Image 1 (cartoon, rainbow, N blue to C red):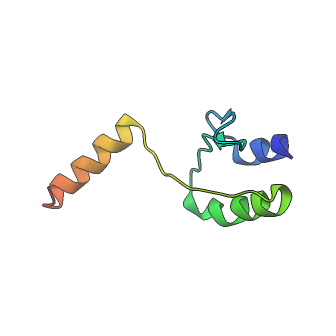
Image 2: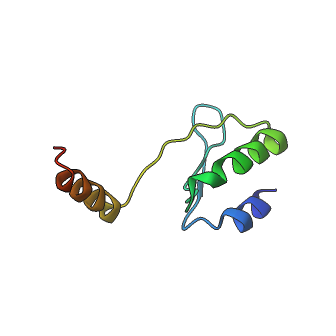
Length: 75
C-alpha cells in the first residue's frame, strides 16, 4: 500500500519514522490541493490513519508569497 501511495502522489521526498508511539510519514508533495480528499480517504480506509496536514513551502515559495503580499499593499 505504501508503494502504491508513493507511486500515485510522486512526492519529491518522503520520510518515515517513529514519533510518540506512532509511525508518521512526512513529505508528501501535493502539487494541487484537490488531491487531498482522495489521498486522505485512502489513508483512513487502508491504514486507519490519523492524518494531520501541515502545509510548508520552499524558500522560493515564501519569497513569491511575500512579494505578492507587498504588491497587494499588505505588510
